[in-house]
Image 1 (cartoon, rainbow, N blue to C red):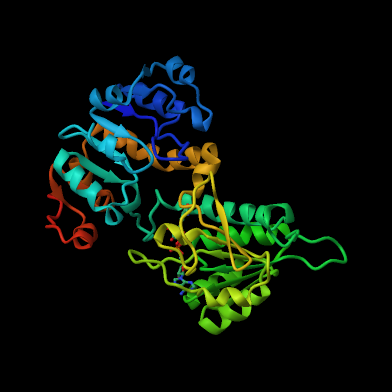
Image 2: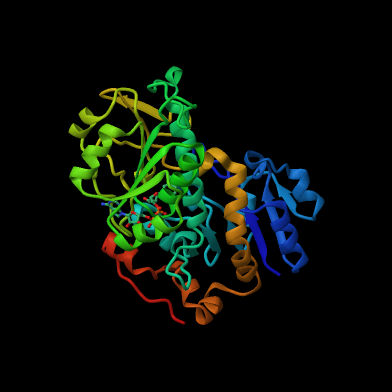
Length: 369
Ligand SMILES: NC(=O)c1ccc[n+]([C@@H]2O[C@H](COP(=O)([O-])OP(=O)(O)OC[C@H]3O[C@@H](n4cnc5c(N)ncnc54)[C@H](O)[C@@H]3O)[C@@H](O)[C@H]2O)c1
């Protein structure tokens, strides 16, 4: 029997939870015990009583949730006060983003936990299946937020993206045609806007041309095309990614002068540094600011705004692994599945993820499988 602990998220503006009541039910039916910190599910609309009804134990503090569990399931990277609660040999299954946080990396190595990172689990298609659902949400949300901030009272130029008969529709430029970009373009075209998607992968654009509707065009991403389309667009969505690297800077401060006053930039890539020079990370409490008349929305954890949808999407993807981890061990799973082995970033004081080791110039040791 494994005791699975679920703490309440403590990062600012984070309302997701690592386990839904149905997930707790599945664990309990498989012979495990679940310790929920009181209020952990509230931000996503799951009250303690729903967990209690299926046999989970509610504990009042984070100390108890972390202290009495063999395995922790959560959402965001452990915050410093959480790192202090990690027990030697405890399995922690969550997003870590170690490459961006040396202090967290050293903390987890020192605490001796087994850090199983959502963001480095891979699949046979070369995708990151526990990251994709959050990109899908951020992509869809980017146009919803962009449409809101195009409204005049919000500081925008007063544009209805879908237009009405006799009036031009709104124009949306999407930089990057991957998961985020495709979801953004799907929503924008569905609203009736004219959409241009830019990418540097011709294969990807070939594929997009096959399935996107006729109000979506693809154009190769180069500085001239970007400049031309910045002048054209009402809404710009930054959705580029170079895996493992900082996002490329595609829109300079000077480029803003080509844009219409009151147009909006939603830089989804802000979690990788942003693809717009003037982008700086914002929060759900204060999501926007304006530079040279252009509204910037640069929230680093966009899925947190739609916590219930995000919790459902995340746990749909994580739950099979939560069950496997509770019924086995990270090392045993890694022996049979190299994709799972990729998710183990630290193991009892050893750094087992090469890019993280390189990012912090720390010694790397491959996971022993
Ligand atoms: N802010 C948030 O809350 C949030 C949430 C989820 C994802 N993200 C971020 O969104 C970004 C996109 O994620 P994704 O899942 O869509 O990645 P992805 O790998 O699916 O797609 C990225 C695309 O960018 C393209 N690209 C690379 N360089 C380019 C360039 N110079 N011009 C145009 N296109 C270029 C790639 O060819 C690829 O098609 C990432 O930085 C990711 O971390 C942010």
